[in-house]
Length: 347
Image 1 (cartoon, helix red, strand yellow):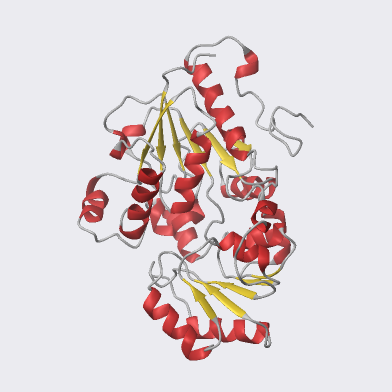
Image 2: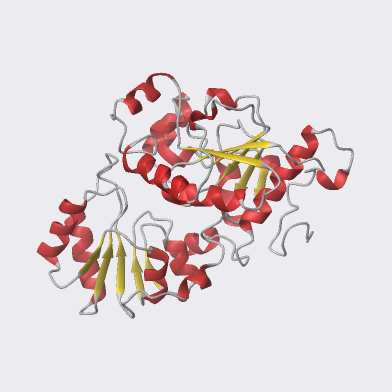
């Protein structure tokens, strides 16, 4: 299989998305890997450049965190993918698809939990409005990719129900959520606490009754130690004051590894956060806006941290197809080839 000097672009976004892309790239050592913060085209890109879209992955803290991560890890940056002709592109969202990757081999990687299917989801889908209006609830529906790598069989079923082409879906697991037991080895100082993972709903113009959420957390804790982990995109000053006003004895963290905080807790409280899956995988008592039975079906595969390798292998297969390889072992022909038993293990 020809992979030497193949150029691959990784389109990043949030810090979670960026670290996922990095892990996949580490399984493609024979290829030339480049990274870019998330970008788009036209008026949206102009608005982003003028800092009007700092609340999303097109700018603000998201872009800043991505650039810092890429620099710290000495990763090659090609902003907007302008400097090279890429053989393959990895992206963590198709809610917006960039014009300059049209016609390229593209692998879409599920980041985590998708937004609920609310009224806006149905309006956007029926009227065929731009997908970003309904957020991640429309993930996968662009069909502008070759393969969609998903977290679990539960998510595969959900995406098919929404209208995603089942022949393009591969259940690979997703990096950062595929080996949750590793988070138990940590030096986070608190143990046995009730952990509350807050959201950036207000920063992204969604409604949230934060006072009611805090009061519910206090009631669930019932005297136990409360630890709050703020979302990276939140207004820290406002969020911390709200918590201290209602729960003055609580601990509030704006930074830190939330997975390790979950590993040490007894109970996890969230609303629409992907980190609930870490809690489920580790057998914690969890509270979420989603039903527990649904969450258990959706929980990402725990495959010992092999998701990045599985996804990278699909990339190599696509490169082999582009090279015109006649070796059928290098081609994706069975949408169910990736199973709980591992890569190439047919059930």
